Image (tube, rainbow, N blue to C red):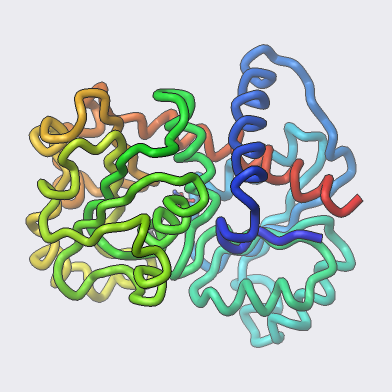
Length: 301
Ligand code: CP
Ligand code: NVA
């Protein structure tokens, strides 16, 4: 039985299989070809934070694969009334075939996985967002071919998305330049473990020079709403614009996991620039997670 709590839970070969399979499943979908290997399989979806893309892509994905999904919010389950996560894991995993969790502490998904009889997928924690990286890698491969050996620039907060980009740099074998305001660098342990793949630079301009992919995310993540105003000042020089992309490689693509805040981490027009591939990236959440579900559920047979 395999879990997907970070990108490190799959080998580089397995991750590349998932990405290529996602591209294939997208083609089936486009051609209207039914593909229902998960008939009668059920996904439990625990959401302790809001979501548009993750919820809809997992729920639609399970339906398209022939299975179904159950949305579980702490507001109306015993999770919100203090039932221990370990007990919830023991109970839910006797009833469903795979569980997806979006929560705050990364420790929560690890504890759930330790007591689960079925695969557990991290659908975003404060520390990592590995499902988004599957979609981002699929999008890059579709647009530009292999990302191996390419240069990627991360602009903004050293947050969950940045951490997953660091893991992706190791697993998909690219170089990552990270530009964050002082005090918002990614976790030191992750930086130390990936010194050969990543470089911390001071300005967005330094990060994007020659980059083939530029990515950013909101300045204040879910759970950091109180810091929004202060962060707007601290991150003011870290906005992605067409002018910033002009300093990257000629064939650069721009990604954002969304939702985007125009006028903050992106200006009002860059999402409409032809170099921005954010809508394709968002759609690919569906295909990439279908491939992931297929992979995880075939491992345990
Ligand atoms: N990118 C992403 O995970 O979006 P949602 O928060 O809408 O799921
Ligand atoms: N860093 C953002 C990503 C949302 C998909 C957050 O955690 O809110």
